[in-house]
Amino acid sequence: MSTRLRIGHGYDVHRLTEGRRLILGGVDIPWERGLLGHSDADVVTHAIMDALLGAAGLWDIGHAFPDTDPELKDISSMILLERTVELIRAKGFETVNVDATILAQQPKLAPHIPQMRENIARRLGIDPALVNIKATTEEHLGFTGAGEGMAAHAVALLEKTTD
Image (cartoon, rainbow, N blue to C red; front, top):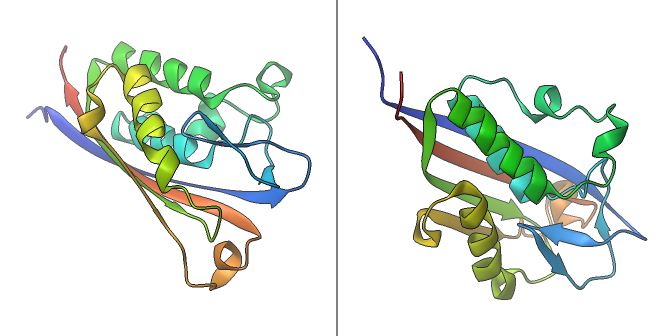
């Protein structure tokens, strides 16, 4: 029996640090700190990529885009998302929708979410209405609540379009 719909979950976390830009959903957000990582450390896009790869049965972003690859140093996660879409399409899948939550004490992210949705939808080749992004604080609890880092969860639904 072949399953036409597949769901995947993704999670990512990065430490906040001085001297880095804060990039979330492909949006450069003005703030005093950014996320530390080998690429641009776009935590929400990384969670979405992991959800897509998981739904397609393709491991995770660490396998697809290892942080030991010097060509990926400081690369835009929007480029990595495009490459992820190529990988899932090669397996015969198309994205139905994605839903993500960013966990960050600050800065306020609501003004930037519409552009994040646009950026991600464009790379996925779907309508922005099919990309949902939310942001929440953790009421000063844990590493995100203490402002030490940010995390994101995402789920993605894929449909098998070719066999």
